[in-house]
Length: 154
Image (cartoon, rainbow, N blue to C red; front, side):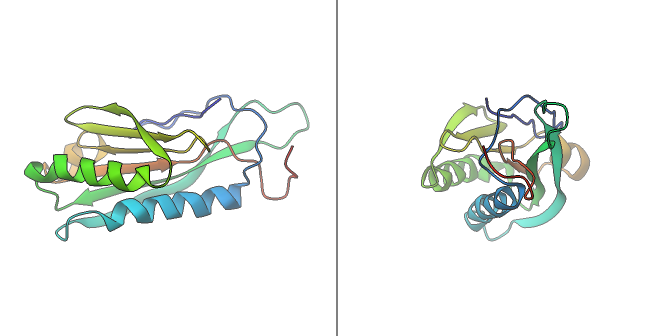
């Protein structure tokens, strides 16, 4: 079962046992985030707003808690006229990493990697525009549920 995220609220959801460790999830979140940042227009400026992890799943009594690892960024300096091009560039770049579009509107692009359950979203609403102005997008990259590094995989 995949864990899901919205650009504004991160909610814990049930996930099965994971072969993915938190450490590996952090690496992949960083790689996917770097891939998105690399396709932004030269005018874009990034501010990391959150890099953390949330509990997910419902472990058996005595079992280690699993976590979703995520990174969230404000992307300022992206003109409203460039949003469609940014969405297309992000979609094309993440497609090379195995992501597919799972939702798209004029304000939001959502992608999921079916091979590992990671998600990514770029949004013109929520944290960025309501706080910073019309030229700011938000980016969230979220891992699937991951086991603690000290816990052996299933």
